[in-house]
Image 1 (cartoon, rainbow, N blue to C red):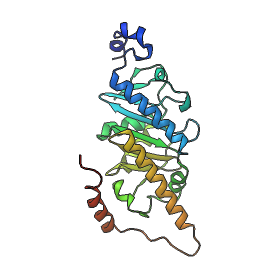
Image 2: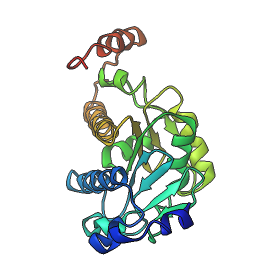
Image 3: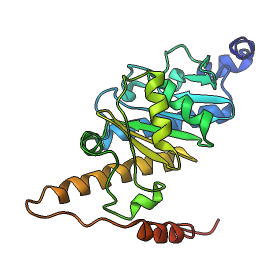
Image 4: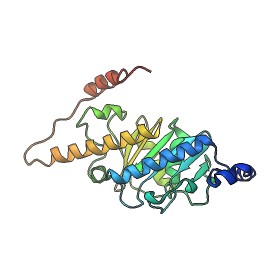
Length: 236
């Protein structure tokens, strides 16, 4: 695949060098990926180069490169791998958390993944085995969000722990680490990350009141919300 794309470099390279070997769909997806990654910083979900974002375009996974601040990423930094993890686009090394991203794409029909080190969600990951159902947004994430057992970042063990926690869910927490959300688009995956962080903040705030215990939603209540959410939003 790398050789095939290298052979595509020709007249288009003189016009826009960074687009050599990059399909228009991939170029557009990369721009959206960079914008999403920068949003995780501007909205306080990551610090520095922590966290990572990916989007699947056909058989290619575009992913943030390791160790590069998001505000320095340009179109020329496009980074992509195939579903086996072999680099097919760019020269920058992919995120060290690539095993988690590939595990999601291999086991689900997700088209985008967002991983952050959001403060409140990370704090909750150290306290409970799953996020208490403090709000009905729990239903939008597939049910109570589980916490994947701790494993060293970038390892296959962490990827496997994450997949188990994601079973039947669109989000999970990584113990002493952060958040993982997936979606049919980058916008949906990001929105789920923001919802998860907000819900964790609500629970931490409510549970910190001395002498009081937050009320939680029952499974029946969450099921009712899940039914209503199926018709939520504008018709497509």
